[in-house]
Amino acid sequence: MNYELREMLPSDEARVLEIFRQGIDGGISTFETEVPTAEAWSMGYFNDCRWVLENEHNEVVGWCALKPVSKRECYKGVAEVSIYFDNEYQGKGLGSVLLKKLILDSEDHGFWTLQTNIFSENETSIKFHQKNGFRIVGVRKKIGKLNGEWKDLILMEKRSENV
Image 1 (cartoon, rainbow, N blue to C red):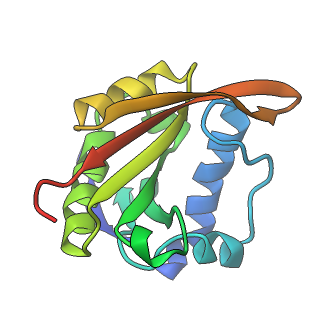
Image 2: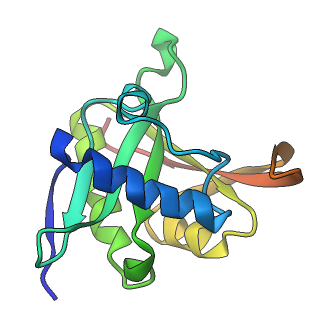
């Protein structure tokens, strides 16, 4: 199968949100319980460093984007990674294509640290990020509840060697 990596376009919003909904429904990817509007989603992410992966039918099967961790000037080079795949395309080794592009693009845009918070039970995502240069910084025990259940988060980061 052939895949194309390209910048996310406004016309991708519905598909991006559908894939995000699958992540919500899976219960181990996000504290979100409802899909935001396209406008709310877009306002939560940087305008740069947004990428999608398309299959041979020009259908978006995965996406990644960066979110600010703080509005403070001292953190302008620190961003949180979001990466999601359609359920049918998970576990096919495609995530590294998106994440490697996101890492390079983030450095081109002056980001020196990428971080991610992963539910402790999402071992696949933890291993995936480690494989792509992220290290575990710590565990945030019972940081929040999802559907009435306390969740631990694994805080991971990747520091740029170039920025």
